[in-house]
View 1 (tube, one colour):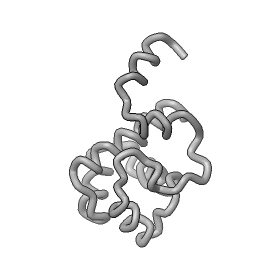
View 2 (cartoon, helix red, strand yellow):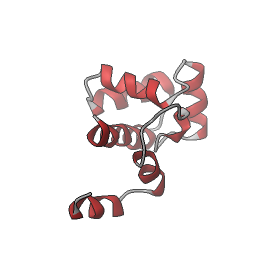
View 3 (cartoon, one colour):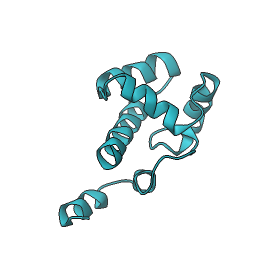
Length: 98
């Protein structure tokens, strides 16, 4: 890890830092930073029970954060804050692992 990456990690929430610390694997969708309990329930009922499935949706939208946020708000009942945090989380994960 480069020194500037350490500085970047210092400004992350503990939940985001934990999510970015390893591959997604079989993590539940609730592990994604910004996903509240209520939003996780909404996502699970729509078939997005795993973080990798939500990541797939993000990738299908060509990593377009604005489009993904709009989808989360309109289709899944996310708040604007939840949508922003979760799209940022997935974008950061892509930067680290793709």
